[in-house]
Amino acid sequence: MEMRELALRVVTSTRLEDKITPAPDGPEALTDREPGEPLRVMTPGRPPNLAIVPGREVKVPSIDGMADLPQRARIVHAFANHELQAAELFAWALLAFPDAPPELRRGLAGILDDEQRHTRMYIARSEALGLPFGEVPVSGYFWGKVEHIDSPAAFVCAMSLTFENANLDHTVDYAAAARDAGDAKLASVIDRIHDDEVEHVRFGWTWLGRFKPEHQSMWEAFRANLTWPLRPLKAKGAHFYPEGRVAAGLDPEFIRLLEAEEE
Image (cartoon, rainbow, N blue to C red):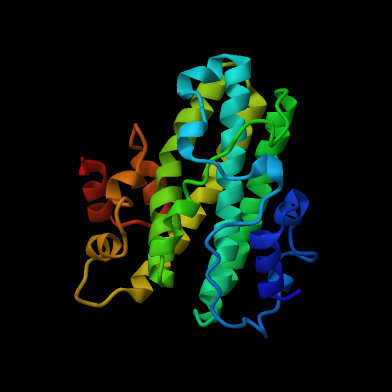
């Protein structure tokens, strides 16, 4: 299967199954002989029950809701939608940047496969908690940022070094909350996703280092590739855990500046 064929299916299909089904023989078997012309899709195809609605119409409980079963199900349902958006956006990048370095495109395809798996994992947990995926409204926060992503560098800064970087914190807090609520299965899923996020952040860090001008520090390059409302503050959670960033290979100065970032 060609990368472009898979990417088109994930981004444009209105069938959930098409979006979360991986490449037949895994991402390593994908070919990239026909990347095509740049294609910037601004809104994903979605089945009616997963249509993106304004954020004000979506009510997701806070982390304190993990102790209550119905609220926990709503939280996990939202996580599934976050991962679905991530899968769609890594596929989006394959369509938007056909001339990106082959090694980068291969990495995007590999992370797309991870995001599809994460979506399936959270869907399974949401259903186990009594809430089938698509029974409550979902937002499109990640999709709301694509109009400003105009280069592979901007993409890795938005997805890998902002959204996934922040998830290094969120996953620690939510796994702990799941354990406190007695849900070891959900905690295990979140832990597994945390470990994948470390590698995704490493991917973004590596490629930003290759793209940035020599005179820029990594922190300067990161800031230069973000467009408001994305900003460094969005790359961390309510509690900051430097260990995940160290594991991902971020340098001490970048970690220090991120931890100190305030509104």
